[in-house]
Image (cartoon, rainbow, N blue to C red; front, side, top):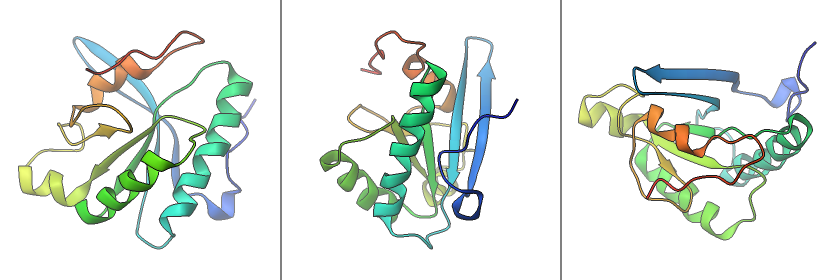
Length: 137
């Protein structure tokens, strides 16, 4: 049985569900690979579809936005602060990972409204199944 997609296939640039782990933690997440072709407001709108999906599933997972530049990430984070979100948004920028010489698994991720950057597996504290979401603090 397949899981309904939060956005139509023609508008999707997303890895349906992925998993990262190390010996101490594991995290499942959805990944939106941003190419810079959509307005940032469209990225925020996608979170409402994810929220509906998570309501249906009875569990939530972080939605990671992997952006091409730190500037675009900064602008998205500013919009995320003011928008009602349907799901937990986490952002990272490819140019930052390149500058730090780390992979996307490294400390390049920041969750909306939480301290960062953190490693990908450190996002495990944000995954919940009907319980409160823990703080990265």
